[in-house]
Image 1 (cartoon, helix red, strand yellow):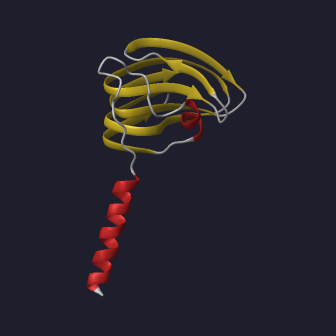
Image 2: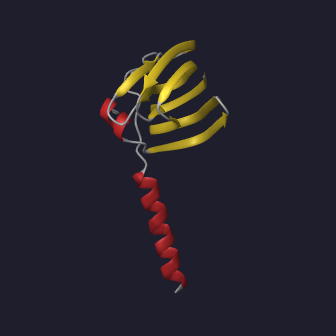
Image 3: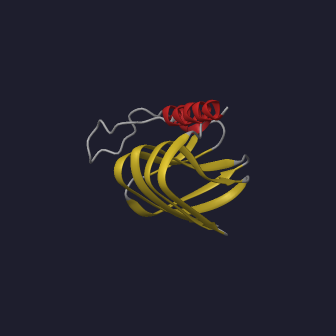
Length: 145
């Protein structure tokens, strides 16, 4: 019985490790353009693997920092309405994209390695702040009103 439990545990562990997508940075250190993840995947998906992540949200301010991300992560979700965002988005490694999107399309894309980016959105639908990363190390700070 003990051997069966050990075998099942090892099988599940191997399954978890192989299910995590691994992307390579194929376009060089200074080009942060995504190479594998598409805009449709960003809108439709939130599958990711991370190493060393930290997320903090207090009232209308938030931050997300990760040492390594592969995939798409939803940082925050917003109800319909009008919001003005101020965003700092820094990428130190890999490829990445930070967007505001709803369930149908990307509404706005923030620039990589730029501080104090401002964008106002008025939406009649729920929408999301999402980050996509391919072997990326990054930091996002945002606030809204």
